[in-house]
Image (cartoon, rainbow, N blue to C red; front, side, top):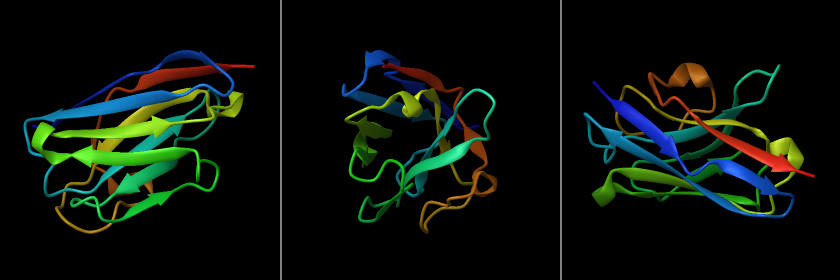
Amino acid sequence: QVQLVESGGGLVQTGDSLRLSCAASGRTLSWYAMGWFRQAPGKEREFVAGITWSGDDTNYADSVKGRFTISRDNAKNTVYLQMNSLKPEDTAVYYCAQPRAAGGRAPVASSGYDFWGRGTQVTVSS
């Protein structure tokens, strides 16, 4: 069984940075695309960023392009989300997710993922 554990969230001010981590166990990350999603109170879960298994291709939501960077270290079985220039509208619970099938690009739709972490809270104060 795949287990994903996010960490690195917290309370920060507008303009600050945070680095989220997603550690996997039960199955290597190495052959799988990975995605980061977020869900704000009263809103649907939305795609934030995705990365291919090799790390050679990434995709981002328009709202975070140029501010967030997704990366991975397959040797450490960990995926990261570097978040810079944070805004109050970035406040949400952030989740990492893994598709069931190996390879391919990270899906944008949440239905493309079968394994989810429990999330880490990010709060950006104005």
